[in-house]
Image (tube, rainbow, N blue to C red; front, side, top):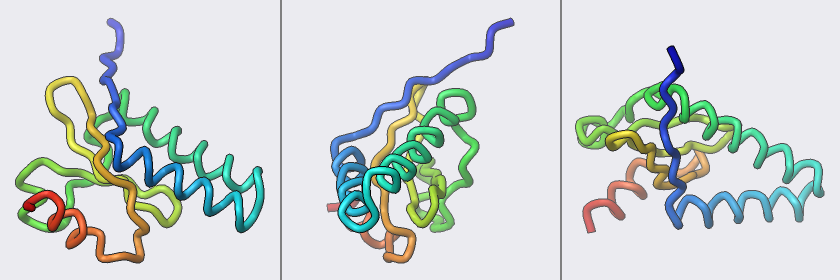
Length: 109
């Protein structure tokens, strides 16, 4: 029996954030460093194609009840949600930020 796979769609805000992260690593530490963080991020995204609920639910009740999960990639938090057979990646935040408040404020504009 073939293993089910899920589509992963990186929404524009998350794609832009990933590009900013890569640019930051490139400017601070060089090509290898930028490649390493993007490779780790894409590895996490690949994991979601097979195990879409592998990241824990968001800790905040409101976000958890809406089905949001997160994955940690180094110091970054990737917020996503499974809808049908597709994983939607909404944002990639610096884990040191108040990312639940930032995300919630955008979600409930």
